[in-house]
Amino acid sequence: MKTYFSDIKNRLSFSYQSMVMICFLQLAFLSALIVFSSLHILQHYQAAAFLKQVNVIPIAYYRVPFYTAGSFILLMILLRLRFVLNETFRNTLFLLIAELAVCYFMMWSLSFSTNDILLLVIANMVSLSKKRQYRGPSLVIYTFMYLLTNTNVITNFIPVTALDAYLGIYTSQAASLIMGVKNILTTLCIICFIANMLFLIQNQLDESKKIQQLNEELQNLNEDLKEYANVREKMGETRERNRLAREIHDTLGHTLTGLSTGLEACAALVDINPELAKKQLTLLGNVARDGLKDVRHSVNKLRPDALQKKTLKEALATMIEEFHQSSGVQVHFACHLSSLEFQQDEEDTIYRIVQEGMTNALRHGKATEIYISFGMDQMNLVIIIEDNGIGCTQIVEGFGLHHMRERVALLQGTLRAYGTDGFVLIVELPIRKEA
Image (cartoon, rainbow, N blue to C red; front, side, top):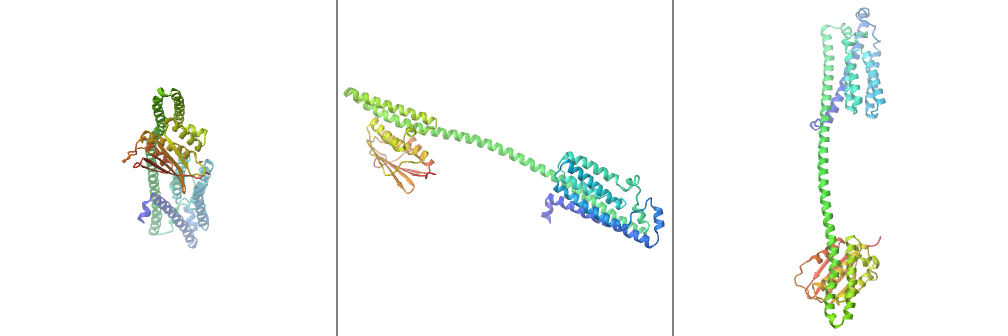
């Protein structure tokens, strides 16, 4: 029970249902009073004396219960319609006129001995009406009707049979008891109405607080999103810088390493064999131009120039041949695959790994021979690059090796390096099937 009444909506519903029950009891009590009083008057032949006390002939007593019950049921249907009908001007006007007409007929049937039923209608309208332009005028009209139909006011305009005329046939003690019951029911109805209005105000205040809290949460979320957007922007900038660093390192590093070695060879040949030195310089010029193209492609987020014009197999063969010609290093390439056709990002990574692997073998290992092999282990491409260079007992991951590992990780692959006998690089890349 405590849990039920802790919810403001349950308290609002309980107060409204209590009003419905009290109004029903009040109408039933007054109907029974008129019927039994009329029967008592007829049975004791007091009709003539009764009619002299009233200003108008009352309606037939046997019709009162039917009129009251029928109008009450019809009113409940109209009140229920507020849940169903859309709140338009036409529907609001229809309900206003219909509810006022039914309430007036009900009160007339009971000789305007009560108008508390209008409080029920007001409570229903205020709780269900959401548009102020309709709720305000409706509330004014219902309130005016409530004040106008008070027994002391309405008798000045319409002749009615006052309740006191029916009570005149009883003893003063019985009449006081009857009025006491009527006043208790009226008081209970007013208390429930006031409680319902208070719960309604509290409910609206709670909803306003919830809306305010939601607005604050939305503002906080907007601030968080702005911060997240700034972080993502910075992360994007960092990723872009890392990408450019990888691309430029791989392309320029490979090109400059070949140029450095080739220029050293040219310096030795220039006095011995000038013609051969010129040919070597021409070759180095082509290597420099190709490297510049790759740098431009890297900045523009394009594929390596060789892969745009050739297949992976042709691009690797060309790169290996140019590397051999510019550096003099012997490169042995063995491919144990029937085809070297992969997804675009996979081919780009494979090309850069071979490129950086050869560059590191020459630059750091001072190798004269490099062995490259491609094979498959289930769905993984295995690339092995080893050389006869000086190797290293403790491998310190530099810029090139770090970026190679990043490239491999982007494809969910692994990279291992060993330097005890020369330098060995083993890369495993999971290969995706073409859709």
